[in-house]
Amino acid sequence: MISLDRWVASFAVVALLSLLAIIGMRESPVDTNNVETKSAVTSRLSLQSPQSEMSELRAADLRSALRDLCADSVNESPDDDWKPEDAEAQIEAWNELKRQLANRLSASPSAEHLHLAALLDSGSASRVELIDRAVSLNPDDAFVLWGAVHICAEEREATDCSLRDWDQRLLEIDGQNSESWIRIAANRYQEDDTDAALDALHRAAASAETRAYWTETLEMIERGFAAGTDFAFPERVGMAFGLAASDQPNYRDYVTMCREQSAKSVQWAYACLTYGELVENQGKTNMGVSIAFTIQKLALEALGDMEMLTAVDRRQKTYRQAMQESVGNNYEVTERLFISNPSMFSAYLAAVRTHGESRARVRLAEETSRLLQQQPELACVP
Image (cartoon, rainbow, N blue to C red):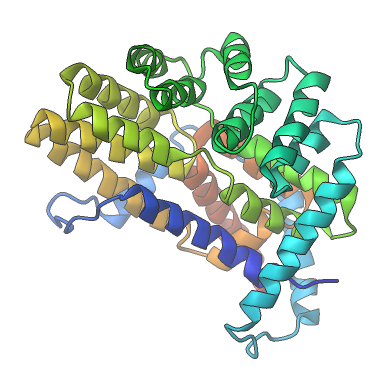
């Protein structure tokens, strides 16, 4: 079996950093007078009610997962001899694996399998053909339509696709989702229909929810790898995180649209600002919320509101510190726990859907620390 553990973990980080660089997120010096302390950040991320967002996870499941990791650590071989030049071979192996799995899934009668095959495929025309088949099989599935709209938007300059039909159908089914509306706004903007783009942006900013289908994408990929490979569950989930990280919404389109139009129109600037505020408050993924801060700052720069810009910058710094806190204590144990078995994975995703990535990770780390204090013999993962 191909060993991709280390590369897959790196892949997700590289994908995230690359996207941040592409959209031009700007760093500014930290104002130590305005950044919350570590304890304050922890307090913001901790639950105030006795009901845990990890309530779906029984203590027995966590204890069992820790014991499994202890057993696995005994059999692990050191990887100190891993060399940077090995990355090329790992990437080639990963691309070949994706190609083989796409070929297997493309023969499936399942809309989900065809959706995943379209994500794995590297050809523009074949990707669109696969997602078209998926939509035909399940035309009322919002997640399939979401995938169709995003794939078609990426490939429409290379091949024909039913973008207008699909994005209108997506709005009929998922019209309360800000992320469906912002994608349609970007589509209209790329078609030079700025009036329709602005109208869609207003609808995005007034939406009842914000969902980028991150957890659904992870679950779909894991199930697809289960159907088409013999990889163990932790390997499937590790690969799911790597692939999903490279298939997030094209946030660059949203940032470009708001940067260009906010500089020209106060109306656009306020619409972008309102949308960014909404996603800051409603978004569940770290990437989505980070983009929301960027969009707000672009709008406020265009409006010349330095006071509000400073306030947003302060909140962004606090959020980044919270993200760092979420991967602080027991990082390696926590990361390995939520991909260790289906119960842990499902509990983690449920917490992400309800409370967001950082908070879910903090809670799992807290629960892990509490159990390790009670049963220190479980603290065996290096």
